[in-house]
Length: 196
Image 1 (cartoon, rainbow, N blue to C red):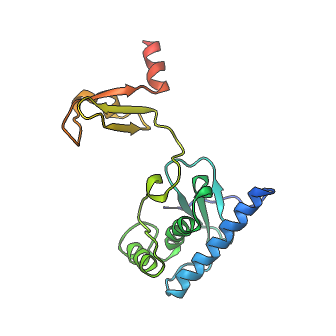
Image 2: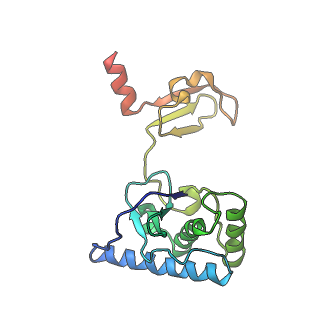
C-alpha cells in the first residue's frame, strides 16, 4: 500500500528495548533492500533508512509513504509485527519496498512480478494482503460483532456495523447454509438501542 502524503521526520526517541526494536527493524530493512538489489529489482535509492512503527494500525501490517516534495519513501510497519520472526518482518518490509519501484504503487502485474522474484529467491510468501494467522502474529483488535450460524456454530467476526450485522436474517452460512444470528452486539449497537 502506498500513500502519497507528506510525513513527519522520522525520529528514534525510544529508549532501551524500544531502541533495540527500531535498530532490529532498520537492519532488516537494509537486508531486504540488499536482497532486492541483488535481484536487479529497480527499487528506489531514496528509501529512508529508518522504519516507522505504527501503534494504531489494525487493518494493515505495513505501508509505504511517498514524500512528493523530496522524492523519498518512508516504510512503516504495524507494532503487531514486533513479536514476529525476522523472516515475517523481512517479508512485510519487502512487500513495502516493492512499492518504491516505478509503476508499482499498486498491486498490479509489475508489482506481482517483483514479489514473485523475491518469493522464489528468498522463500518469502509476499502477497497483496495477509492475515495475522498466516503471519503467526496475534490479532490486535477484538471483533465488535460476531455473527453465528445456528446450525454448525461457525463464527463470523466483524469490525464494522455492516448490512450483515444489521440484517443477519438475510444471509446464510457459507459452510452449511444455516441461519445466521447476531451473537455479540458491539458498543455502538447497545448505544443505538438505548437511544430508541
